[in-house]
Image 1 (cartoon, rainbow, N blue to C red):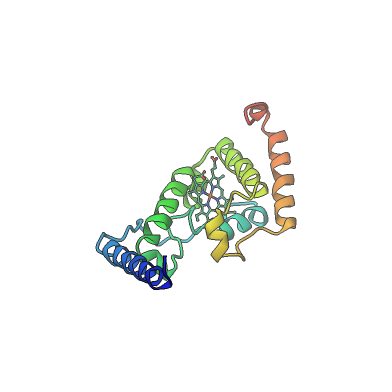
Image 2 (tube, rainbow, N blue to C red; image 1 turned 30 degrees about the horizontal axis):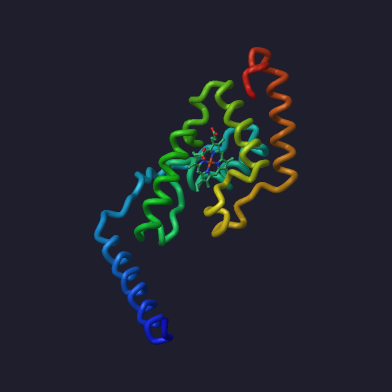
Length: 159
Ligand code: HEC
């Protein structure tokens, strides 16, 4: 293959990708419903606030979306994430969840944070500041221990 034809291939690939990118903009931008809301930080505030601050861009009705959330195909990705995250839990509904469900969410959150699964990888790439500190994770862990001891019926149903 001569250098000339390799360059030509590059051009064709470039044009193809640009074409696909432009075409994809014709598809409707996916946009989850944003519902203005203020989250009353659930108590104990010191424990839950770090979760609200770091996780509300997906687990809430009122996320702060970056400008590129309105550009395809990123819009599909971000808005799908928010949709799926909302199915798990949203902070606006915290008080409506049973004590057991709250505990379950906290336990799963601790597990996800420790396994570096939450916040999701791509979100962390652009929002590296959205992380709980070691102290906050430890406080969450202590609080969960305290709660589980308190909730007798809870024993044994979390893997
Ligand atoms: C970029 C969006 C996004 C952010 C930010 C985010 N989550 Fe999630 N979360 C998701 C999605 C999507 C799911 C559902 C799919 C999954 O489980 O991976 C989810 C699911 C969960 C679940 C349920 C997991 C299970 O297996 O049942 C927990 C718990 C959770 N998130 C906690 C958190 C915590 C804690 C934070 C902040 C440290 C956080 N999330 C930040 C998108 C997000």
